[in-house]
Image (cartoon, rainbow, N blue to C red; front, side, top):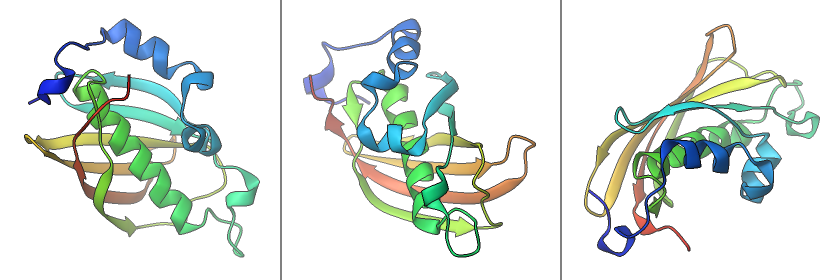
Length: 151
Protein backbone atom coordinates (compact mmCIF):
# COMPACT_ATOMS: atom_id res chain seq x y z
CA UNK A 1 0.00 0.00 0.00
CA UNK A 2 1.27 3.49 -0.85
CA UNK A 3 0.60 6.73 0.97
CA UNK A 4 -2.07 8.79 -0.84
CA UNK A 5 0.27 11.79 -1.09
CA UNK A 6 2.73 9.77 -3.20
CA UNK A 7 0.42 8.32 -5.84
CA UNK A 8 1.54 10.86 -8.47
CA UNK A 9 5.22 9.86 -8.18
CA UNK A 10 6.48 6.54 -9.57
CA UNK A 11 9.91 5.55 -10.83
CA UNK A 12 10.56 2.83 -13.39
CA UNK A 13 13.17 0.13 -12.64
CA UNK A 14 15.59 1.92 -14.98
CA UNK A 15 15.09 5.24 -13.17
CA UNK A 16 15.64 3.55 -9.80
CA UNK A 17 18.87 1.98 -11.08
CA UNK A 18 20.08 5.32 -12.47
CA UNK A 19 19.25 7.13 -9.21
CA UNK A 20 20.99 4.57 -7.00
CA UNK A 21 24.03 4.16 -9.21
CA UNK A 22 24.86 7.87 -8.99
CA UNK A 23 26.79 8.43 -5.73
CA UNK A 24 26.26 12.19 -6.03
CA UNK A 25 22.53 11.56 -5.45
CA UNK A 26 23.04 9.33 -2.39
CA UNK A 27 22.45 10.75 1.06
CA UNK A 28 25.71 11.64 2.88
CA UNK A 29 25.29 8.66 5.24
CA UNK A 30 25.11 6.19 2.33
CA UNK A 31 28.18 7.75 0.70
CA UNK A 32 30.04 7.48 4.02
CA UNK A 33 29.20 3.76 4.23
CA UNK A 34 30.38 3.16 0.65
CA UNK A 35 26.87 2.25 -0.62
CA UNK A 36 26.59 0.71 -4.09
CA UNK A 37 23.47 -0.84 -5.64
CA UNK A 38 23.84 -4.45 -6.79
CA UNK A 39 20.29 -5.47 -7.74
CA UNK A 40 16.66 -5.36 -6.62
CA UNK A 41 13.17 -6.69 -7.30
CA UNK A 42 10.22 -4.38 -6.73
CA UNK A 43 7.76 -7.27 -7.10
CA UNK A 44 9.58 -9.57 -4.66
CA UNK A 45 10.47 -6.77 -2.21
CA UNK A 46 14.24 -7.22 -1.91
CA UNK A 47 17.41 -5.32 -2.73
CA UNK A 48 21.10 -6.09 -2.50
CA UNK A 49 23.72 -3.43 -1.99
CA UNK A 50 27.45 -3.41 -1.42
CA UNK A 51 29.19 -1.43 1.28
CA UNK A 52 32.87 -0.60 1.48
CA UNK A 53 33.75 0.01 5.14
CA UNK A 54 36.36 2.70 5.67
CA UNK A 55 39.46 2.11 7.83
CA UNK A 56 38.12 4.53 10.44
CA UNK A 57 35.15 2.17 11.03
CA UNK A 58 37.52 -0.26 12.81
CA UNK A 59 37.22 -1.06 16.50
CA UNK A 60 40.30 -1.85 18.66
CA UNK A 61 40.28 -5.44 17.30
CA UNK A 62 40.55 -4.14 13.72
CA UNK A 63 37.01 -5.17 12.77
CA UNK A 64 34.05 -2.96 11.84
CA UNK A 65 32.51 -1.44 14.99
CA UNK A 66 28.96 -2.70 15.61
CA UNK A 67 27.29 0.68 15.14
CA UNK A 68 28.54 0.81 11.55
CA UNK A 69 27.31 -2.75 10.96
CA UNK A 70 23.89 -1.64 12.25
CA UNK A 71 23.99 1.42 9.98
CA UNK A 72 24.73 -0.75 6.93
CA UNK A 73 21.83 -3.07 7.77
CA UNK A 74 19.53 -0.10 8.39
CA UNK A 75 20.51 1.43 5.03
CA UNK A 76 19.97 -1.86 3.16
CA UNK A 77 16.52 -2.35 4.70
CA UNK A 78 15.47 1.28 4.27
CA UNK A 79 16.42 1.51 0.63
CA UNK A 80 14.64 -1.79 -0.01
CA UNK A 81 11.41 -0.42 1.44
CA UNK A 82 11.70 2.74 -0.66
CA UNK A 83 12.47 0.73 -3.81
CA UNK A 84 9.49 -1.58 -3.16
CA UNK A 85 7.25 1.50 -3.38
CA UNK A 86 9.20 3.00 -6.30
CA UNK A 87 10.49 5.84 -4.13
CA UNK A 88 7.04 7.13 -3.25
CA UNK A 89 8.09 6.77 0.40
CA UNK A 90 11.04 6.88 2.71
CA UNK A 91 11.01 4.91 5.94
CA UNK A 92 12.50 6.37 9.11
CA UNK A 93 13.32 3.47 11.43
CA UNK A 94 11.13 3.07 14.51
CA UNK A 95 12.95 0.05 15.96
CA UNK A 96 15.87 -2.13 14.90
CA UNK A 97 17.31 -5.32 16.37
CA UNK A 98 20.69 -6.61 15.22
CA UNK A 99 22.31 -10.00 15.79
CA UNK A 100 26.09 -9.94 15.32
CA UNK A 101 27.07 -13.44 14.22
CA UNK A 102 30.71 -12.96 13.19
CA UNK A 103 33.15 -10.06 13.24
CA UNK A 104 32.83 -7.87 10.13
CA UNK A 105 36.18 -7.21 8.48
CA UNK A 106 37.10 -3.82 7.05
CA UNK A 107 36.50 -5.06 3.50
CA UNK A 108 33.58 -5.00 1.03
CA UNK A 109 30.37 -6.60 2.28
CA UNK A 110 26.94 -7.30 0.79
CA UNK A 111 23.74 -6.12 2.45
CA UNK A 112 20.35 -7.55 1.60
CA UNK A 113 17.08 -6.01 2.66
CA UNK A 114 13.64 -7.60 2.42
CA UNK A 115 10.16 -6.24 2.99
CA UNK A 116 8.25 -8.64 5.21
CA UNK A 117 5.08 -6.54 5.34
CA UNK A 118 4.16 -3.12 4.01
CA UNK A 119 1.21 -1.74 5.94
CA UNK A 120 -0.67 1.52 5.65
CA UNK A 121 1.58 3.37 8.09
CA UNK A 122 4.46 1.02 8.95
CA UNK A 123 6.80 -1.43 7.25
CA UNK A 124 8.35 -4.57 8.72
CA UNK A 125 11.77 -5.35 7.31
CA UNK A 126 14.62 -7.81 7.63
CA UNK A 127 18.22 -7.61 6.55
CA UNK A 128 21.47 -9.51 6.39
CA UNK A 129 25.11 -8.62 5.94
CA UNK A 130 27.45 -11.09 4.26
CA UNK A 131 30.92 -11.37 2.87
CA UNK A 132 31.09 -11.70 -0.94
CA UNK A 133 31.69 -15.46 -0.45
CA UNK A 134 28.30 -15.75 1.31
CA UNK A 135 29.54 -15.93 4.92
CA UNK A 136 26.79 -14.50 7.13
CA UNK A 137 28.04 -11.72 9.42
CA UNK A 138 24.91 -10.13 10.92
CA UNK A 139 21.13 -10.09 10.64
CA UNK A 140 18.53 -7.50 11.57
CA UNK A 141 14.82 -6.91 11.79
CA UNK A 142 13.21 -3.49 11.88
CA UNK A 143 9.97 -1.61 11.82
CA UNK A 144 9.72 1.77 10.13
CA UNK A 145 7.14 4.48 9.61
CA UNK A 146 6.05 5.37 6.06
CA UNK A 147 6.60 8.97 5.01
CA UNK A 148 6.16 10.61 1.59
CA UNK A 149 9.45 10.84 -0.23
CA UNK A 150 10.63 14.47 -0.38
CA UNK A 151 10.14 15.98 -3.80
